[in-house]
Length: 381
Ligand SMILES: C[S@@+](CC[C@H](N)C(=O)[O-])C[C@H]1O[C@@H](n2cnc3c(N)ncnc32)[C@H](O)[C@@H]1O
Image 1 (cartoon, rainbow, N blue to C red):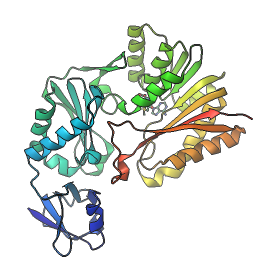
Image 2 (cartoon, helix red, strand yellow; image 1 turned 60 degrees about the horizontal axis):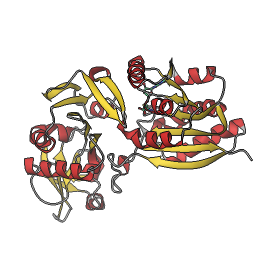
Image 3 (cartoon, rainbow, N blue to C red; image 1 turned 180 degrees about the vertical axis):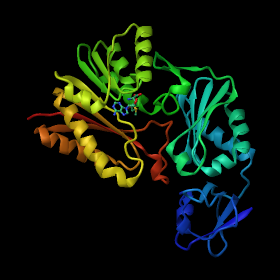
Image 4 (spheres, helix red, strand yellow; image 1 turned 120 degrees about the horizontal axis):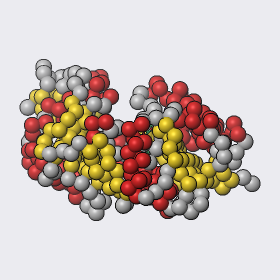
C-alpha cells in the first residue's frame, strides 16, 4: 500500500472524519496513484484512501480504520447506506458521496433501476471493486451511468453515459406520492429526477389550498405544479427545458390534472407576467459552482426574487431554493431582504428546510449540505 505523510496540523482533518486532503496539506507523496495509507509525521495511522496527484484533492479517505478497500468493505458501506434509508421508499438517493463514506459516488434508485455518477478519480479507479458490491447489495434490474458532471471534468475524467448493467428502459418510470412521470433517461437532467425536493413538495402540497394560484418557476417536470393542481389550485409552470415540460404535460394528462405551461427564460417570463399568486416557487439550477461566482449569482437571484415577490398575493408564500454548497442560508436571507427592500415589502420567515434524509448531511463534511429552501410569507403590518 502507498503511503501519504500528512503535513503537521492537517492530521486533525482526517481524525475528525473529513476525507479530502489538498496538495499543500500533503508533506510526502508517493510516486504514483493507488490505494494509500495516510499517516501523521510521527508515522501514526490516520486513514486509508486513494491517492492520485491528478485529482483536485489528491488524497481522499475511504476509511478511518486500518483495512483493505476490497469488495467486502464496499458491500458493508452499501448495506449501511441501505439501512440508513429504510422506510423511505424505493425512489430515493441511495448513496450521497462522502456523507455515506463513499467519496464522489452518487447513486439514485428509481424502483428497480439505479442511476449512478462517479465524480472523482479514486472512485473511478476502484470501479471494479465496488461495482459488484453495489449489485450484490441492491440487486437492481439495470444500472445507468450519468457521469457527465462538472466535477468529473475538473478531475480530468472523460464523460461516461449509458447502460452499465442489465436492462434499463429508455423511459424511466418515476413515481412520487401517486404521481407518475415518464422520463426519457438519455435526455433527462441530473440523474433523471430531483429527488431532493420531495419533502418540500410534500410540505407544499399540505399548505396549498383549493382555488389558490401557484407559480412554479424552474419547474422541471412539474413536481410542485402537479401537486398544486391535485389540491384544486390553478398552477402555472415555467422552465426552459422543453423535454421536461413535455414530461409534465404527459404526467398531467395521465393524472387527469391541468397545469398551464410557459417555456422560456425564467427572468423574462417573470417580467412579462401579471396578476398575483398565493405560492411562488423559485428553484433555480446550481447557480454557483465556484466561490468566486457567488456575488454575481446573488445579484441574479435578487433580480429573480424581486420579480417573484412582485407577483405575490397578500399573505402569499415565496419558496426560494438554492442547491449549491457555496450559497448559504445567510446568502439566501440577504437575497430575499434586498429584493423585498426594492419593493418595500415586509416578509416573515415561515421556515427554512434542508435536503431530505436520503441525501445525508454529515457534520464532518460541510460540502454534503447543498440544498436549502427559504419559505417566506408576505407579512404586511
Ligand atoms: C433544480 S431544477 C428544478 C427542479 C424542480 N423544481 C423539481 O421539483 O423537480 C432547475 C430547473 O431550472 C431549469 N432552468 C435552468 N435555467 C433556466 C432558465 N434560465 N430559465 C428557465 N428555466 C431554467 C432547468 O431546466 C431545470 O428544470
